[in-house]
Length: 394
Image (cartoon, rainbow, N blue to C red; front, side):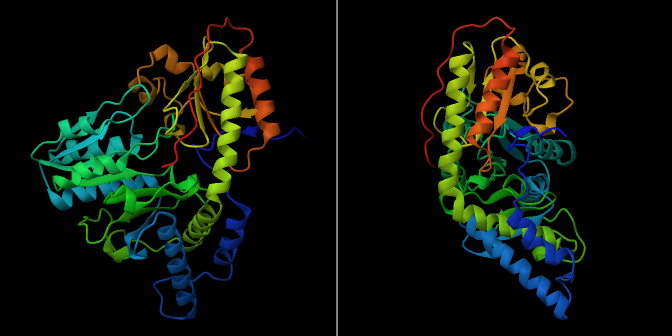
């Protein structure tokens, strides 16, 4: 029996923490009640959901747990925020602003408004680090703009945006602000008070929780049109019987992030920087993508000098990594994120995404380094580009 591959794809998904599974198990067996039922089983489930809601709210600094609306994941949360928020403000013919590096779920939600509700959409460009300039967002605003959606941290290159600077301008114009924080919440980097966004999307499986559960933070009395109607669950914003085991797991994972993030982030960042520097030393011509300081602790996006990343991964079965977003797997087109930051189509295809997590070890990093260097050894090499600096804590 062979050993399992080294897992360096934590931006795609994270392994379920055993402590999270332990918290979920009673609600997969004996505690099976519907939280909408008035009897003892239902009351136990309802209490568990309330506890989980408090943990998720605490993770992102939400003042009131009622501001957390559970969904099936970040994709649904993005659609609920963008489509539901826009339609609650202007049912037809408005304008939304987003960026060229957003997750496909956000771009699709904006396009839905264009296709079905007569909206227009502006996609703001980013710089070579993947940073959004607040002035460019300001320039894109129109009299009929109702929503701005800018992701907090990018899932491919790890760049963290200054959402608070964008939100300040947006709110001055009385425009709604949404941010997809699916990637950054797992590092405890989301503070809704500081970000000042009206909507924040979250995903449990990006923070060592179960798949199939996410949440949308809806600030205070912000208006939102439900996209799914029925029994009136989640304040009437998201109908359907609550997935209690998954919600409990989400809450348990959020509580662990809240207590462990500072320590684990430092350890992950140190391993990431070690891998980045050693790859650069060993393979001249490697470039590191993303902001040199404002980036996720566990993200490393590198462009190789000659070999295509997909070909390299095909010959490295002992390493589980990615050429880009897992949501783009199977696409013949290069990553829209990488081309947006100025990479050529050829360079985008030579780009490898390595995502470290809190269980990643130093020995795994050393073995991954050896594997990548060995796989690229047959290709001609060029001069090296520096890695950058230490992450800035936001």
